[in-house]
Length: 183
Image 1 (cartoon, rainbow, N blue to C red):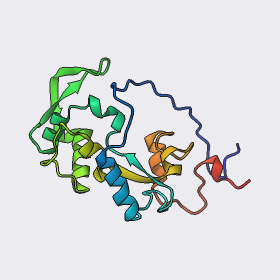
Image 2 (cartoon, rainbow, N blue to C red):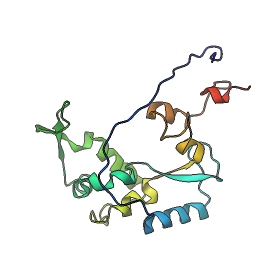
Image 3 (tube, rainbow, N blue to C red):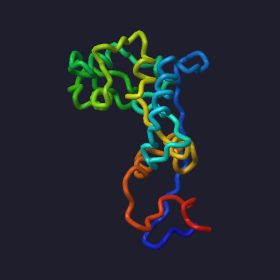
Image 4 (cartoon, rainbow, N blue to C red):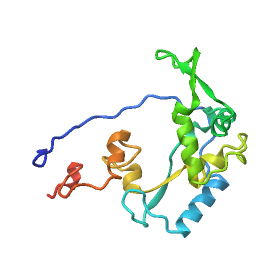
């Protein structure tokens, strides 16, 4: 495709190769059912488009499928300021080294604080029941299906730097993806 004037196209193919912890087939937790019910009743808009019809709930800080691989006791400790340092990870093995760094410089700490700002109560959180965080509104991003799962727009279909751009106001005339070019 020919890019619009003063733009250039960047086309990548995204592939992933990760392991999920074993888990039973996904059934919606009571928390998730309540989160969606409350959100739909409040007509919460898509965080990108503002549309209220066709919204879905994206696990923002941690996906449900990874919930069984997270040390939730440590996460709660980070959130409450009880865990002050985290191990530096070896860049080849991703395993902890003997070195540590300040937990306040970690992405997990930032996630915990953002969830707290959104109203999550880490003091009440029971690590034995991670669904109370995973499926809570504080861990959700309300998105229209287009920005959740669709090609060239969905958070599950593109890298974060490209996806998050859609949240920012655009200068008039800027075209983001080829499907926005009039036929």
